[in-house]
Amino acid sequence: MDAAAIEDILREQLDLTEVYVNGENAHFSVTAVSDEFALMSKVKQQQLIYAPLMQYIATNEIHALSIKTFTVEKWRKACLLNGL
Image (cartoon, rainbow, N blue to C red):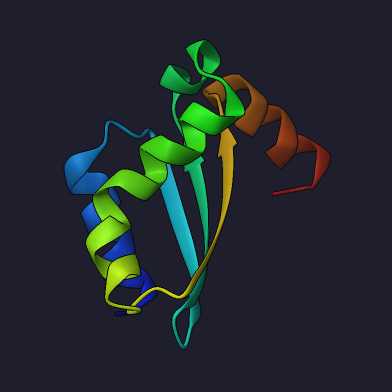
């Protein structure tokens, strides 16, 4: 499993505005952007991202997963603050 494959899975199965995955050796970080997150608790946001990846977590193809979620507006502000 590589970062590009995880991005593809998340893009195909979720309605995300943007998604970025980094990592290797079964340790990955996901940054996901969607206005759907505005209506969800942090736990629900995490569950949404985990759901399409559970089979890979179960087989240890993904061992560790760090998730950051943003609405489109919060992502825009974070990019401006960090000079991205």
